[in-house]
Length: 275
Image 1 (tube, rainbow, N blue to C red):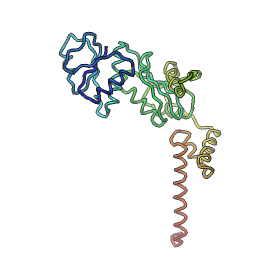
Image 2 (cartoon, helix red, strand yellow):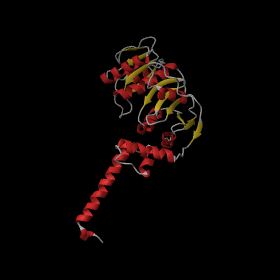
Image 3 (cartoon, one colour):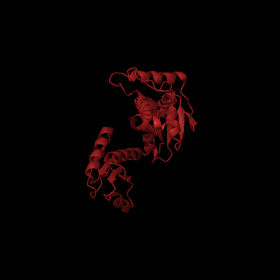
Image 4 (cartoon, rainbow, N blue to C red):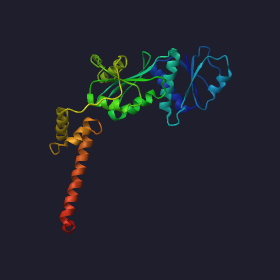
């Protein structure tokens, strides 16, 4: 059983909410109170003194998870990390942490410890690598498995994870049939299946956009600007690489055009400045 023992109000409520969402069996006690007989894991805060008290009880075999050891963590982030660590300790397994990524403009991301899914996410492509790094930073031997679809987005994720072991996975058949009420879950469920499928270890992925992909991005820019603007190939390539959205590329195109127009107007108004 998990026991929550903290006087930190924000941390307490975040922990209780997460544990209820996970369906975990838990109870709460004051930090200085005796632990219930069936206690297996205690989640506590850095200032509660529980870890020190239990360390002095040499006969205790209770696992202690201290939430909030990272100074930058808010209560919710500290609670999430602590609950994941507590669930792993409760299972008593030493399963490897594997992160599955279903690439796209909003990748699905699933974190597994052993064969158990401990957390799932779906975030914009620009946030995916930072999230994956955050999820594996405390793992002893993490592995990231990235689906080989959505070639350009997949390449960006693989190449940006240059400090983490990465496998490229054949994602054929990883997206399940979505029945009633499951709409929008496909990318996350595909990420779970990708995490469970062995792939090929890679150090990077070099994929250039095809001429057709570049043309589709340029056409999309014209649609979004109501026929006013078509971005150039250089900007379209940056969109294909995930560096810019089409809207951002349009804004950059307009900024450049305005700067060029201002320069031309200044030259007309100041003919003496010409060489």
